[in-house]
Image 1 (tube, rainbow, N blue to C red):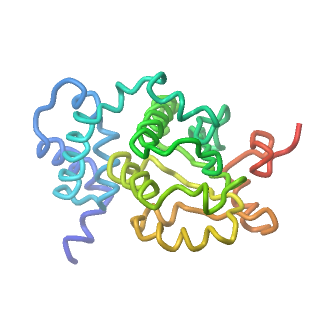
Image 2: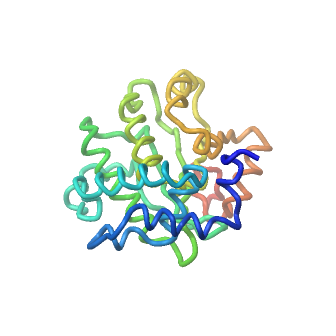
Length: 236
């Protein structure tokens, strides 16, 4: 049996967490707060329980957090990005109690990719902060109303979003529903999907209101009484 098979042996998970802790070494301040056992577990999970790879990934995040300072972003800095409601935290959770982020790329109102990323990071941090006890993940709902090739996020922006999510918030995304994307989105998706690692790729679900199976899949995650009407929820 090759070592790569043993990496993901559940009975070894606690051992691996302790190995990663030892490999990272003593931490202080915010890094210490960030590196909980659940955090070590997420980074190991993202790297198929390979301690060396998880260590490299986590160190890169700790460096990123020390320079980007995501927990210091305040609403005032990013409020103008939020004016059209292009990304916001939903008032409801999914059936598993996950925080839900709603993304509406057709509502794009700014051009600075750096500011757009700060706004998104602010919301991801906020979503994570608002997770209930024992729940580590969030769900994304992406609404394509008003989306055209002219309002589309540049490929660089999509790539940056994916990189931040995959590299610095591993195993935080449970599922991303792309709701009723127009046909022209397919060309954009063909490019963007190459930035997704295999785990993330399988979390992306396309939902079309006329496709019964995809609507049923969405109902497994969401109570339709909670869903906004643009995602097929019940009108009030």
